[in-house]
Amino acid sequence: MKINSANIVKEIEEISEKSEKSEESQESQQELTLLHALSKHSVSGLKDLKKEFDPTPIDPKAKKPDLINELLPSIPKESINAIIDKAFNPKIRYTAYIASFDADLPDGEAIVEF
Image 1 (spheres, rainbow, N blue to C red):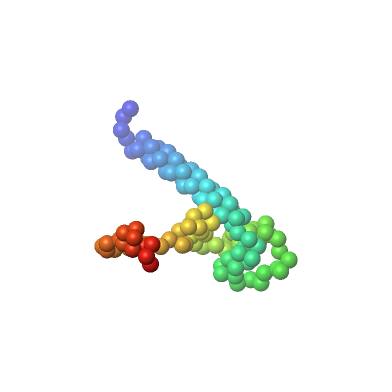
Image 2 (cartoon, one colour; image 1 turned 90 degrees about the horizontal axis):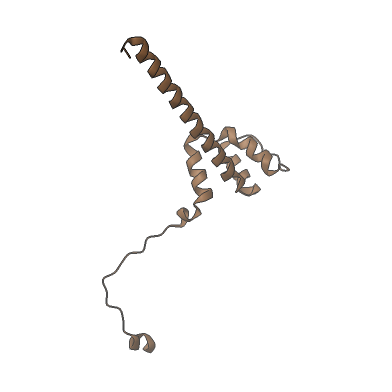
């Protein structure tokens, strides 16, 4: 194959098309994951999220699917990962660190005595 500008342009276009498809696939996977994460919330949790991201009034009789559909377009991209993490990794919120101490442990007799 001869190297010419037409071949190079064609290859670049093919690579960019593959890249766009990959990005679209990642976005659709993230959207599905977000939908799943939102479905794990309670109705009151969804209402709290809606208050946080969307200033429009909330219908008090709104069901879970309606809240999710209203909430989806108003969630900023920066917040999507945080919502997903809270839904699927709740232990992250309660992580604590235990320090180690250089101290002698009491023996069994001291424990029984105290």
